[in-house]
Length: 360
Image 1: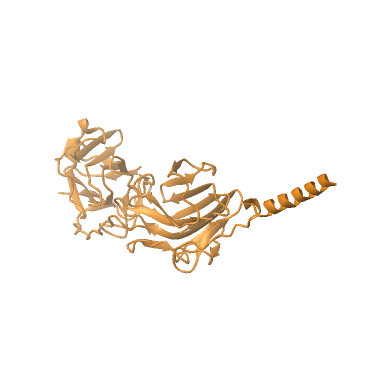
Image 2 (image 1 turned 90 degrees about the vertical axis):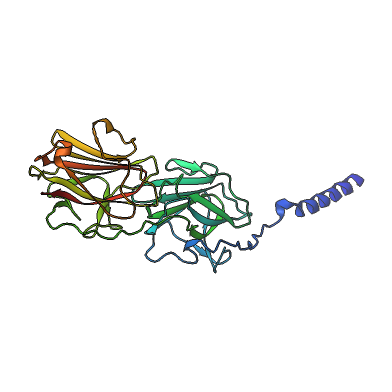
């Protein structure tokens, strides 16, 4: 009888202990204190998406229970990979030491295992992540451990490296988490950096025979570079190669041309390099079938300088359209039919326009 009483008392005590244990406690997510972002931030997403933005993957779920600023943030919640892609952002990323920034809040009652962000411009895609490497897709740069739960944390990703998107226009950001609940808010940049000046249009002689200006000759095509409406020596656009850092070589090339020249002609074009990044070298090569000739300014590093005509150590002045006029005889192409032109640069962003010839 005494043994039965002891067992009954032990059972009651065990139930009481278990009932008061943390395993049976309900977790309540507290409201996180709002951070104080720098007033200089350029914010793209706060309470709403930018005008014109679209959501082709997933859906943006707004939540008024947590927010770093304003009245709401958007949230990921669920097991496995959660994805939303915000497209058509059209945000210019400045040259220099600027960063893309955002604030995240990890639910202490439902923790995530990874936060992954994907950034896309017209010519570059970069992936970064915090925490475990669980979400597939692309070569990812690890930015560190996940931030502490229950508090708004500012995440920063340098535009220069690993994004390598200085001077690019950001098309979209994709937000992904693995497990748990995460809120996102105040997405934008720290607004640090340099925006290229728009150069004044030069006075182009009416006697120039322009081959490339807003378009290329019939039958030819742009084999390197792309059209840009950011700068124009004449018309509405010019050609440029995306900037990928001081050591990268930018190339603009128009191929499959068939442009005749007369003996004594100059080969002409206009270039504009930005002071946001220092131009170290400019090299121009003209092709006439199997023959070619080239000139260069500045230091060496692009390659082929031993057979190129050195024009001086001073590169074209930044932030202005510079007319380059080279006698075809200087590069051994006097009276030749030009089949291609290639403009290479190292160290800066360079726009090219109004390519052609000038008769003396």
